[in-house]
Image (cartoon, rainbow, N blue to C red; front, side):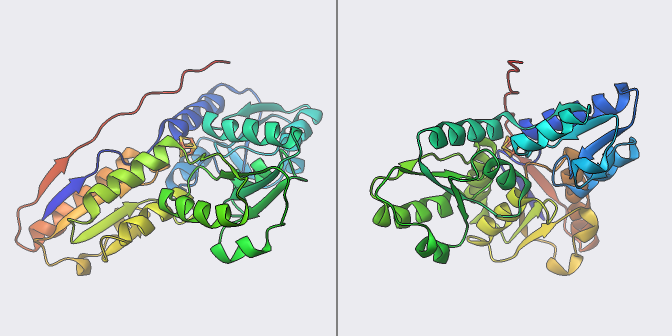
Length: 302
Ligand code: SF4
């Protein structure tokens, strides 16, 4: 079996930053520490944080004292205001690239734009962005929903959830421009998502099998699996090595391994180990080709 890793895969700088901040908080806080929802959408990272004593809650009102961590996906400004009004210490790990969307949306709303947000309605990031300018934002995801967006001759703008597929964004854009020629375009798909999709696509067409490592709850992992499936029919999403089945292989395949932006390195390595074991068990000596590049950390300005 020949195993290939694309140039960019796995945990991004925004997720690394959020996990680091959460671990530091768990170590240093003197009182109880809570996290609103999940720090990032990966079951193993969430479990690890819980083992460090951080309790997950669904709503701010469940917390009466201590520290509340806000996840990398961000929240509506009113959520942070609510937490502060309850005298909670707030540790905000929102990714700077999600903050960028909050800033864009706020500025557009102040100029009275109608804002179309391409994203999954129940995703934490999308709900947080919506909370910045509730009266201006219309969330949609399916192409059929475009017909139900309000018609207007006034200013309109398109923004996107950071983890949407680039190809899908472009298709949506063409459809929207037919109906709203005045559309102002803000492609807010983040650099990490774009790099992971582009580099998975660069190898997927040459592979017999593509494996994306990531949790079902992770939007960018699901997207990676979907885009890989466009070029490689045997395309799977697995949460960890345990979900890799030897029935998928005869032993001599070319296998691409990519991973969502919330997937830690050790889970990817676990899948590679498992593939090597499967290959050997089927009588094929495995090889691993790595094309990995690293990404620059965010420069903290506050
Ligand atoms: S996927 Fe993009 S937006 Fe999300 S945490 Fe990573 S860098 Fe930030």
